[in-house]
Image (cartoon, one colour):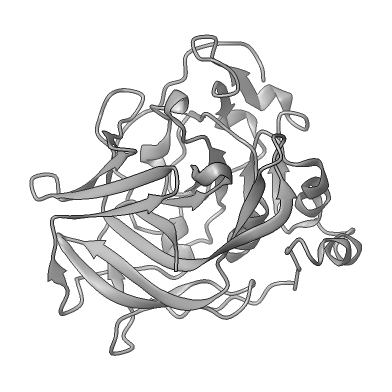
Length: 320
């Protein structure tokens, strides 16, 4: 859990955007159809090799639901965006669905968050024009419709912009079978002592909410979004083995969306408190990420590594 990975230093804050581009200048939809994906649990086992992560920025407003491919992600990150709404960044490595989406635009926060992984692939629909140089300079492989048009298609049964989907097999990404969560130091093992029994936990943004309700029958935290049960494209209920409510600073960035709303910036470097839900219990933990090139560690109050139940991990960033 205390993994700290040294990588090339890259500044990704908006304040240092010009320096980022200069320092890292040398670094580095098709036809219509109905989106679908296979279902099944995500396993925490690693293939013994480093994970090669495909991160996809996924829409999360009402017209975008049900999303396709969320049930196959190793980690699902939830963050606040403009107007108090939410958006998802799903990280895939141990298994890869055929189709993922709807795909939406990237944010500045994604660049810092993704530095935990070793040069991941980022699939996104686009970004604010002033942010594009930072994306190009970041240590990741960007895959957008402009760069790889054959990797995307529009679902004619949905309204734009909530109908752009990624065909993962048409991207340059190649999965290793290793689990993204294990790769960044999350430890899947028996539960640590303590914790308190809880029926569920709700996280609220100004214009969005996420509820996680424990199901002993399914051994999962059943997910609801904005008061409605979240489901896969096939109708199955979305469920998480583990939920992390990570309390962070969410501040205004220097970027705005096309309607003039300021984009929030979620600070994932630093330290603070968090709640971990597993096996029907809630644990108070601390999170720490000393630098952008480090992974995030989660420790109990007695400074022991927090352990996680096998399965999909949801990490929800909540304002301190």
